[in-house]
Amino acid sequence: MKRIIIVCFFLLTSAASAQLTSSIQLGYTHDSNVFGNYAEVPDNYLSLNLNLDNYVGWDYSALDLSYSGGLSSYASYPEQDNWNHSLNVNYAIQLSRAADDPDNTGQAPVEDGGFSLPADSTETSLAFSGALNRTVPHSGGFAVYASYNTEATAGLRLALGQNSILRLRYGLNYTGYDQVTSLSNLENVGIGVVSFMPTRSVYFYLNGSIGSKKYYAVDTVSAAVKSLINMHAQGRYKGKGKSGSQTGSSAKTYVLNSPSASQATYGAGLNFDFGRWRAYGSLLLRRDLTGAARYIDAVAKLSAAQSEIYDDPYSYQGSEFGIGVRKDSLIAGISFSVKLNGANKDYSRPAFDTSQTMIVANQRKDKFSDFAIGLSRDFPSGGFPAGYGVALNYDHINNSSNDEFYRFTDDIVTLSLSVNLF
Image 1 (cartoon, rainbow, N blue to C red):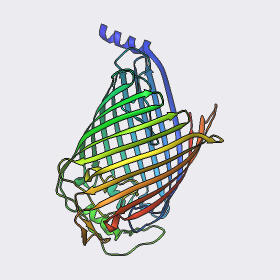
Image 2: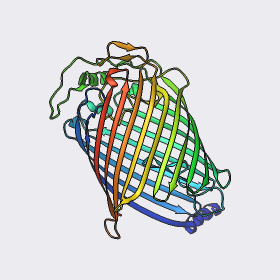
Image 3: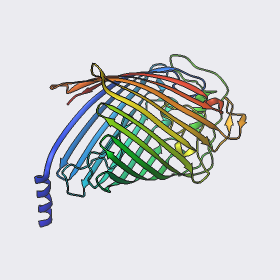
Image 4: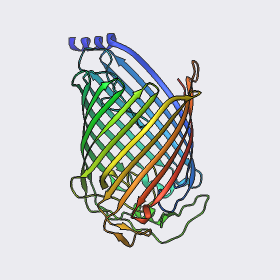
């Protein structure tokens, strides 16, 4: 009984701060190749997102609870409309007592639109996080994508001195599909990051990871996937959208009989932060540890940007890089950013023609690049709403592949408005 009283007294007397925030984002996007293949089918869609975040901080620990929900509505292909919900919890406790400002991330670097930010303290801390995500397509054949995802991570942040930090993280991630059970999988991943900050303006890190994915069923072509093949003939979607149905011969689906796959990654990054100027560069190498990969080809997906099912990182190996520059308050409070991300992907599968029936090369090889430019402006407010911001982003994606189906370009333009409610 005494122990319970002591714990309750500690929680009551050590509470430092609490903050509840909420925001809404509305975006309009034109995508010139919404399915991400040679057919280049365009579409426009609206997205609406609601975010709620409740942060409670004590002297040496912090708890963050958040919810985000989103709706995507497509103009030409309403079969793609979908809801998504996400619940997140993060708890961090500061193990050392040299300062009162714990690092609440439990991992690093902190990502800000691709620009890595240095950690805010050199304290040793332990963090635990969990998430529950749910995606629910509205109707039609795309209901096959109804899925849920649960993940849990634990991370240790250990200061190695005034300028160096070691981060170790282990995570479990389970993804389950309501209709396509052969795609349900469990991922285990361990990550290590060593970072150096010789000055407040320069941040360098080395990272490595080992991960594995285990699938709980082997299904060469399930009935649910067959329905997608029928909708996606020669890369042209046969839906009931405003643009009408497309015709063509059915594409072929491949699922390798490998219920598990493993992969190692290692890389490095360099970040610069000079006040309103930020720049970064990173390099990552992926290596297949088992020689086995599992994938599905040439079927419809929610959009070109959501390709985890059809372009799972465990299905290829190669190198990836990223570079970028950002300038805050460039002109009249407008911030500007430019980024270039690229990847060389070697798949453990042949390359086919557009119909996915004739082999044209013994191994599929892709060279992917994404060039992005962004403009944004924030307008803070002391009342209700607490502020709002506008942003305009443009992406040019190019995927050069010896597989004719996946040889494509894509231009994506998004105009968005965000409102901070409180």
